[in-house]
Each structure stands twice: as C-alpha cells, then as structure tokens.
Image (cartoon, rainbow, N blue to C red; front, side, top):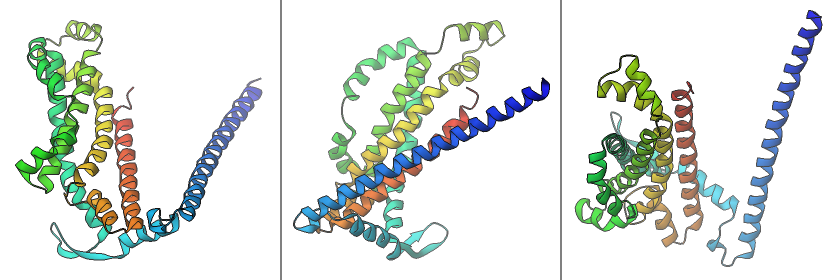
Length: 283
C-alpha cells in the first residue's frame, strides 16, 4: 500500500508539472498570436495610409529603433567623463535624470504624509481641506508654474513628477494605515508594545506595507507617463524626442522613442514587481 501511495503521489506531481508546462505554452502561444495579429493590422494600416510617413510600418519603426542604439553622440557620464553613447540611451538617461529624483521625493513625502494623516485625527482635520483642494489638480496643470519657477529643464520636469508621485503614495499609505485591524494594536499592547513609535514600527507599518508598496508600484508607472507629458513642453529626454521627431515628419523615429518609453516601463514595472514579491514574501 505504501509503495502504491508513493507511486500515486509521484504520478500526481508529474501530471501537475505537465499541466503547468502546458498552460505556459498555451499562454505563450496566445501572446504570440495577439502580437502577430497586432503587427499584421499595423502593417496593413501602414500600406493603406498615404503619405506613408503618417503611419510608418513596423519594419521602418524597427529600423529606427535599432538606429537609436547604433548612432552615438558625445555625452558626459559620472566618473567616466565625456564619451560617446548611443543616442537612445542618452535620451533615456536624460529622462531618468528628472524622473528618479521626482519619484523618490514624491514617494517619501506622500508616504510620510499619508501615515501621519491616518494616525492623528487632528492632522487629518487640519489637512483635509488642503488635500481636497489640491488633489483634483492634474500634475501637468502645474507645468506653467514649473516653467516659471525652474525653467524648461530637469528641475521643472522633476517637479511635475514629484506632484504626481505625492498623491498616489499618500492615498496608498493613508488607506493602508486606516485598514489596519484594531485587534493588532490591542494584541501588541498586551505583548508589551507601549510606545507610539514602537507601535508604528512593529505593527502599523508591517500591516500597511502591502498597500504602501502597491501604491509605490502604481506611482512608478503613472509618473513615467506623466514624465513623457512633461517633456513634451521641452524638457530633454525620450518624451521630448517623440514630439521633436514628429515635428520633423520623422514618424518612424517618433514611434521608435515610443517603443523605448514603453520598453523602459515594462522593465521598471518588472523590477518593482520583483521587489514587491520579495518584501511581501511573508504574506
């Protein structure tokens, strides 16, 4: 009987692995089918549009994308100094120069503000009118002030990203703390956690971590889209090159930069998703 049980368990594990492998192949096949269909429709549309520069074909856009990494321009890198770098990488680095500081600053301010507002009712009462007034204003609506205060450079675009990151992280942290079950602090008190700082560090933050990290992941993608909009006004980067190429009727180059922006987002989202799974592995 024991031998039969072991054989049955081994057979079940093998069948489970075969099922998972089949599901993966099926998913890959469906994804490939969808992508192929999209490229075929794109190619058909490119053939029917005249003049042809109005909708470049996938092949022309692919050549332009490759050109972003074969054509090089001078660029000064930290430590290395001035060197030649692919033009696509230069524009991406320019975008990251104002994107990264804006996201980091907005995330820190938003999370801290959300936690404090959720923990202290008086702070919530004090800030509610201000938050209700400022929250509905789209980040790009601040562009005029960003240009006046900081100019059409990295600082102005970073300010727009900062505005976008604040509210996403604020509401993620606020809702995360608000949704902490009341029994958790009560249990912590019975176990000897008697200070506010200890309660926040040992109970509130771990319980609110899923909502906080999820909001951070959302802000990473949302602010990347906001950044592209901010760069359309003239800040250097991949977003600006989209409209700059279109102004020169180089629509294939414009599409190439759109692909670059999209691919960068996919990589960032995958990286933050990996971080999220590791940090929240305890769930």
